[in-house]
Structures are given as C-alpha cells and as structure tokens.
Length: 168
Image 1 (cartoon, rainbow, N blue to C red):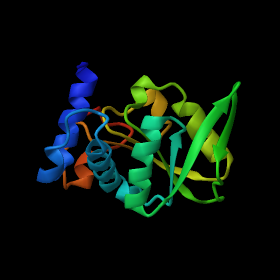
Image 2: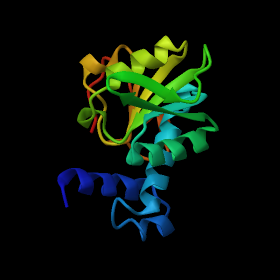
Image 3: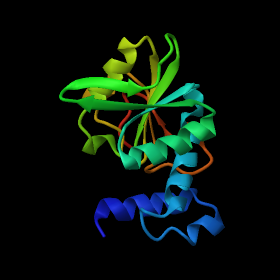
C-alpha cells in the first residue's frame, strides 16, 4: 500500500460513520468516496457553489458525484482532447463553481481547468482537495479547502486562505 493510499484511507475513516468505517479496506470501497465526498462537501459549503467541476476521470468523477449530491449542485466534467478543453454540460454565466479532486498536487491542469471555467462565465468560488491543497502558485487567488489535517464537523477548520500554509 502506497503512502498516499494509506493516507486517503485514514482520512476516509475519520469522516466515515462507524458502520462505514468497517468497510473502508481499499480505495475501491464505495464507503471511501462517500465519506470523503461528504467531508469535502461540508468544507465547501461556505463557498456557496452551485456547480462542481471535475476532470473526467473515474476517481474524480465518483468523488465529484458525492460532493455535488451533498451540495445539491450540478456536476460538470471537464476533458481535454488533443489540447482542447471542453465540458460535458453547461456552466451558466455567473454560476459559482468549485473544482474538486483527491489531490491537486498530482494532477496537471488545475490552472487550465480554473481558467476554462472562468472563460465560460462562471466564478470559481473554491478549490477542493482531499489530500493536499495546490501550492500557492496554483491557487490563483482562490480559497482552497482540504480534508487533510482537519477534523470532521468543522468546515472552517478545513478552509485555507491563499496566504495560509497547507495544514496537512
């Protein structure tokens, strides 16, 4: 088990109910996405999003689905084909979007995703991550929210301003 996998499972157990925690044995467990998605959604509530944007990848799609469901928000998938960005759905001008991933530090393209979302007329109200927030250069002046190092039940404890350090 990699360090990152172990860390994700540990964070999921912190956010899971007692019953769910019994089923958190691998990242493939549905209880993992449920627990992490609920936790991340709770931390993103203060951003008041009406849309969740994720890269069109299996892991991000499942996490994004749970986050969007919990926030009663629309879910939009972003994709890149030969360098051209697109989305599956629409971003209404003025909508408040949050970009969500397990770990932005391992993904390229946060900057492109944020700028594309903004080019569609949406406001990027936050960047959500389970493991680690992106570095200051990638935050683009946008509030970031991460579960790593925060305790369940306190949305403000997981919010990081752009000048704050990673608490994970």
